Each structure stands twice: as structure tokens, then as C-alpha cells.
Length: 197
Image 1 (cartoon, helix red, strand yellow):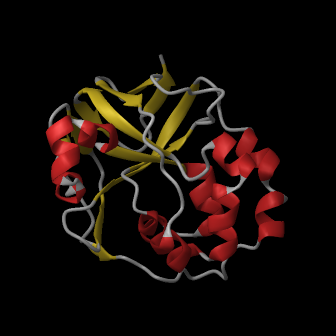
Image 2 (cartoon, rainbow, N blue to C red):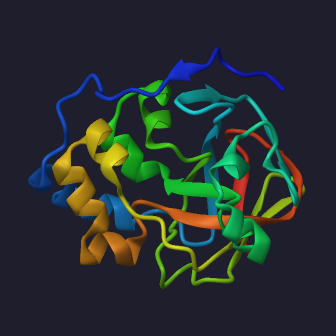
Image 3 (cartoon, rainbow, N blue to C red):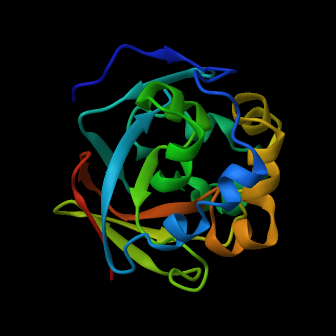
């Protein structure tokens, strides 16, 4: 599995933080994401706290999530005991949204998600329980576990970006993304189709 060398988590990006006005002016672009068949734009692995690897291909597994990622170490003992940790095996974000916040794949990886899709991931188009096939074999399922902008997201992309993704419209469009579990494992590559089943 090819990967770029690990990149440190970036606290700033090369472009000035996006303003609310800038983001709001691009809402139609965000809403125009493909409704049924989209594309995997970025595949990221987080092998350790504070590092990101941009992958040419990643492996999704029903037990391990993104193979080589440290997602399980982030789960609480109670979540593991009840099985709730499986609701956040994989974090997915809108590729269109992150592209408004950062120019390069390395900077976009700072958002902290593993998969970035050019697909309409809104609540209306992709309710909890919906499934998406990725590439030839992998399938993920949207879970109910919330995925919202946090302090780290604010530090990397600015207050306006955090408020925008957590706003009513941002939440409706899931601009910060969603949590998912792996239903069927497989290889996922940038350029693969992302198809709502």
C-alpha cells in the first residue's frame, strides 16, 4: 500500500482562513455534489496521534476499519464494551467542503478524516443506515454518531469554518462529514467510484 511520508497535523493552511461570506457564497457548489454516483477524492490514514498519511490505496476491514489507522485507540473502554466504537470506524468528509478550506492534499488531511468524497452526503440524501460502495468491494454504512467541528478543526481552518459546518445548513448538508462503520472490506483508492446503494 503506497503512502506519502507521514505529514504532521497542520495548525494553519497556506491560504487565509475562509470567511463566512466566502463559504456562504459557495453553498450552491456544495449542494451540487453528485446525488448517486460520486468519487473518492482522498484516502488518509492516521497511524499515530498527530500524523497523517495520504494513501494511493487504503484497505477497509470490518474489524480494523482503515487498516493501519489508530481509530480504535481513540475509543473509550465503555464504547468498546458496548460496541459503540464501531459507529466511528471511518470518518468521511465532503471533498468539496474541505477544498474550500485548504489547497493541498496535505493541508486537507489536517481535517482528520480518512475518506473525502465528492458526493452529496446530506442528511436528506444519505440518512443514517444508508450504505455506500467504494471501489470494487468495500461498503460503508452511515451511523447516527454525530461528527461536528471541534477545537482542532477550528485551530486548523478558523472560527468561521467551524461555525459554518456546524450551522443549521452545514449540519443539514453534513459539511463536517459523518461517521461510518465498515460493512464489507476492500481496497479503496482515490478516483474510485462512491455509489449510494
